[in-house]
Length: 229
Image (cartoon, rainbow, N blue to C red; front, side, top):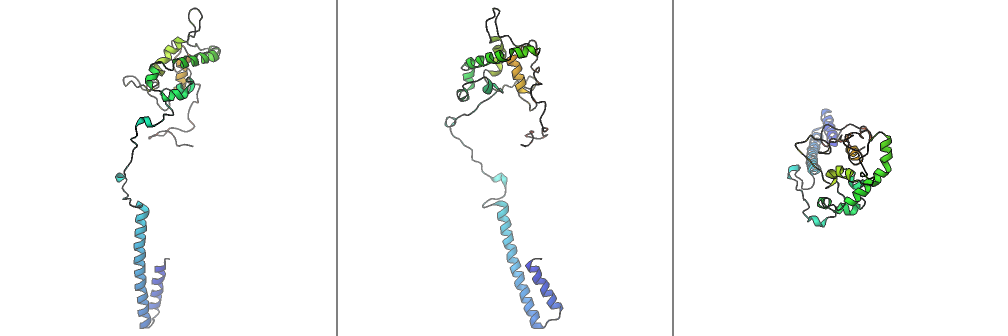
């Protein structure tokens, strides 16, 4: 029971016990004082509740909140990463700092073609026998005279990585590389493009390389991915 309840209970017991008039008057005065104290406490509670719910100066209406957005000149920032196609910046680019500071216009100008070609040559040199041993046909890395020529592989991959941007064709079916769904096996498809002869194999040939499914299902609502765990 609250303190005010105890006072009221004591007053009721005293009156019902047949106390004298003076005792009755005293008890009534005590009850009146108790009521006054209770009113003051209630007012304090109301004030406290208002402060707790809305905060200092807060109306409690989220729609009235002001947001401050940075409007600094873009040149005042330092870009630390850029990526359009998955695995390109991480797997075939060696001068990563320069690449991150560059723009797609630099890609289209051929600034990083030398690095991309060198990386593809290294990958084919390391994996060519493994691909053949697995019954797969690598894209050609030599010309008719047997001279190393990675250009056929580069020619297939170039539209995806030069420039390194996300490309969307609204007239084509959705799915990587035309956009990217959460379940699209983007890295497997990219590996197929840079390693395999696509006149023999489809881009889905290597889809079994990566993990088959998530350990938790996607959600039905945005942002669709499962909570971090």
